[in-house]
Image 1 (cartoon, rainbow, N blue to C red):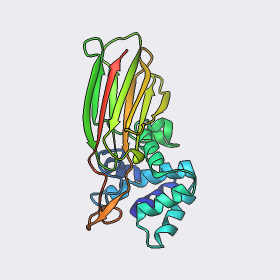
Image 2: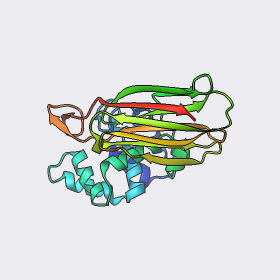
Image 3: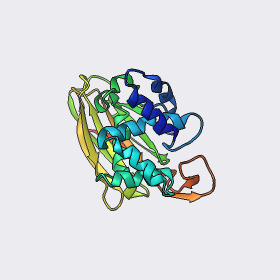
Length: 248
């Protein structure tokens, strides 16, 4: 309710940017916090998700979500149906949203006004440290790993490999290759039946950074009474992602 209300303010009065004050408590300011947390100011900050959805699918997606919620669906289930009716899925939409927040200036109409979502980990790679690997648990949200050249490198490539421990169908991984001038190449890394995926992307000369965006778009819940969108406990929290990056 509050997220769509704040979104309406932003749409109705485009010259007033009061909604920006909520972004520190949103998937932009705190990408490790679930999108549907309804407390601590996050219920206002999630207006940015509706902005992203409306820019991709049209403003009617917000109205239809409300209409579906009126038939006793909880909010995320209502959104899932409205998005599906427009030929998209929540995992695909959420993965695009998570990636957009790392490069807002290129992804939103007013993205030059938005801060960039911070990476939960960042690594400098070079001849002294040509590879890095690790694991992280991801709640029903997203996290990002950023890779930068630690020193002057000529044209190189970066080999990315990752594995999702469970929930393959609602997991998405996107590689963002960010150029010095701000241009962004987006590449979805497909997961096989074992939850593994790999890609080779440009690195070094002509590349500012490479972001690996890990998105857990699980929408399963168990009733318990919480501040999440359905008042339940997510069945998808703590999903393990293991990743590695190596210079070539």
